[in-house]
Structure formats: structure tokens, C-alpha cells
Amino acid sequence: MRILGVCGDDCTECPRRLATLSGDRSRLAALAALWVKAGIREVLPAPEELECWGCTPANPCAYADQRRCALQRAFATCGECPEYPCDVAARGLERSDAFAARCRAACSPEEWEPFRKAFFCKRENLRPGGR
Image (cartoon, rainbow, N blue to C red; front, side, top):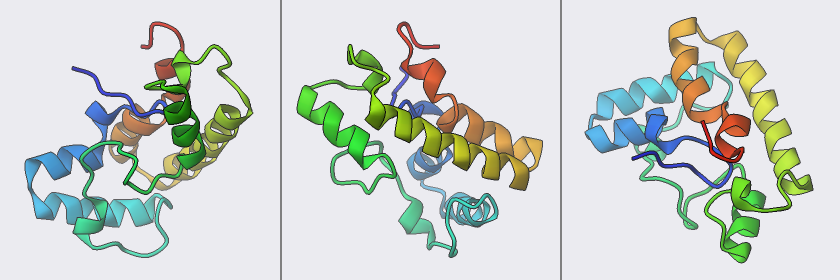
């Protein structure tokens, strides 16, 4: 079953979530180093800082404005909203595009692909019918 975050991230493809579910600390540690290399984090996080069990209101999120709006309107994703893409979602997509450019430039093709599938297909994931 496919799980999408409010912003359109694909949690079923998320390297953080997959490593967390596997219980493999070395996988989380390697991912932490990749997060720094890709420019997602400035300082090397401890593996447990990358643990992710999926999007919840308690988790810190780069797309908190989108999550707050969707929760207030009772939508599972921004793509369900008749106003999508609104200004809030557009800012989130712009932020994601900037992250994507930095990440792609820093990563090998093998490193980039899991990021792309999990985090950088938001537009496709949020359009009616999804991908």
C-alpha cells in the first residue's frame, strides 16, 4: 500500500522510513552521512535522529505549513484540496525543487534515485489520480 505525506512525499519509498522499519542502525548511520553529502543536513545527525515512522503531527517537518493547512481542512494530501496548488503548496514545491537541485548535484545516480522517488515526485504524486 502506497503512503503519501501531505506534501506529496512518497513514504513507501522513503529511505529514512525504510531504514527505520528495518531496525538496521548501520543503514541509518550511512543515510545520515548521505543526508549531509546531499545538503539536507548541515551537521552529521545521530542515526536515531533520522528515524521516521511516517508523517505525524508530532514529527518535525520542512513542510509544516502545508501539513497544518491540510490537517485543518481534513485532507490527507494537498492534492485533495480543490485550491491546490495554492500559495502554501507552491512555496513547498519551490522549496522541494531547490532541495532537489542541490541533492542531485551532490549525489551519484545510485544515491539520487531513492531521493527522487521518495521526495522529488511531489507534483506527480499530488495530481488527481497520483502516479
